Length: 394
Ligand SMILES: *Cc1c(COP(=O)(O)O)cnc(C)c1O
Figure (cartoon, rainbow, N blue to C red):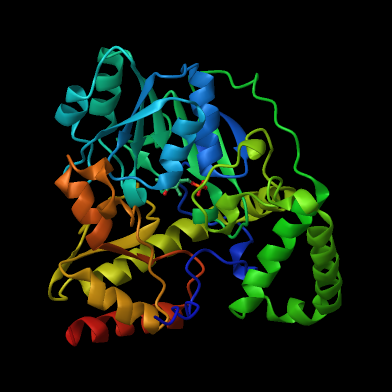
């Protein structure tokens, strides 16, 4: 089978001049407002840090939602703990009755995800964890911003983690926060200069690929060329590049966890980008794009939007559409260059979800379309029209 073409529009946030600038309203809290924060290179490393900080011992158990991606399980295995899966309900909320069935004396930690940016019922979940003496890790990988019951997401857990790549135009980045535990004993070292250069180059390259930062492109042509040459040489020189890669797998589309990145801090360029991003624009655009998709795709046959409402305090990660018979439309859309994310896409082939029909079904049937802040109006329009046409002929 022919490989799918590169998406015609950017699947994730991308650097442009509009990314920055004066902070506009509206403002919503982000995970870094919650408490002490540590910036690492990815969300999965933040999970690993959180687990280590709980003091979990080898052989003890972590409750993990059966609707998950491999990068949520990798840190549990890294901590030599055992993942135990619990079911979710058809509205993606945690099925606490099923979670209770999984409990035994070895279960010490619960990991809970705000899928696609939509909050879990945190009051009940917090009560459940307190009742059973569990530490709670709030996985805000899809919810860098937002509130539940007027409180910031990330403030309910003992720890919360986020992934920067899903919300900001950065190559690397993740964060661990806590408003309940001091994180002073976590000491991070800065990544090497080669990684810093790679993170910087990757940002620019990605932007140029999708025709952003045009004026800069010519200005930086020569420096980019030279840096790329240096880059190639570094790669050729580092013989142990497989054991000691210059970038973590998290930045290049993999799901693995690289143990030697655990104690490394986020690149400087990512810090600068995150600090200078206009979060008001980010929040407004994501919500606008989500509502435009909702409006345009709600009446399509043989599918339904997973969340038909966008609550006030919610900043969506993507637009999830549940499709009855996903394979033909997935294939046709990918061929036309429509970017699609499928959270937990391999779960339907694994026995991890056997006890949860909802997770198995979602992992196969939920297609997610981007609604990030850096989609241009004509790109969003093209995506909507292509999706509508494709569904009409299926
Ligand atoms: C992406 C993701 C992670 C891991 O984040 P990375 O930054 O890719 O390591 C964790 N949890 C969920 C729910 C995710 O979607």
